[in-house]
Length: 138
Image 1 (tube, rainbow, N blue to C red):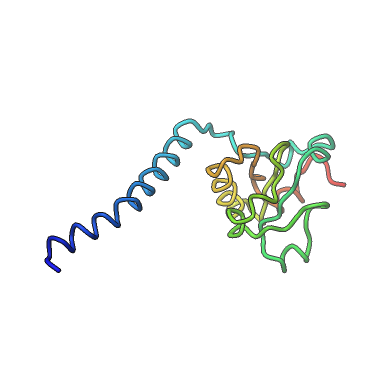
Image 2: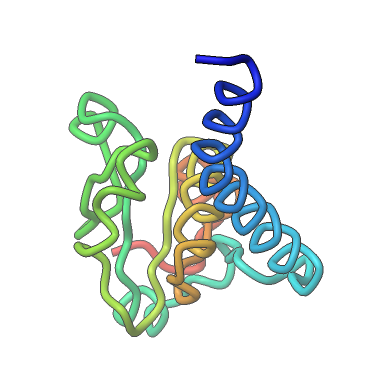
């Protein structure tokens, strides 16, 4: 096989992957261009009895941390598993992701929103913030 044929073959194989990467980059940029600072977050102080009753809580920590304590009624989906388990999330109503402080759940929220779940928000300050300042705790 000639060098030219090998290069053409690699270019042919790389073409779809490159196009996919460009599409993902465009989707990320599009989301970030239109996202406001408040979009995609909820503060513990905003979780009153009505919000609590209407929302679905997803604890994105590992199973051991979830077992040690979590928001009542929460489902455990570790943050890394969120893209693979999107089908388990309700398509309507507010879905609140949280971890201990909000950093890992923010990554899960970003991924879920990019994959089409616009009803997903992150609990800013996480479980710790919820314990300290939530407007409502059952």
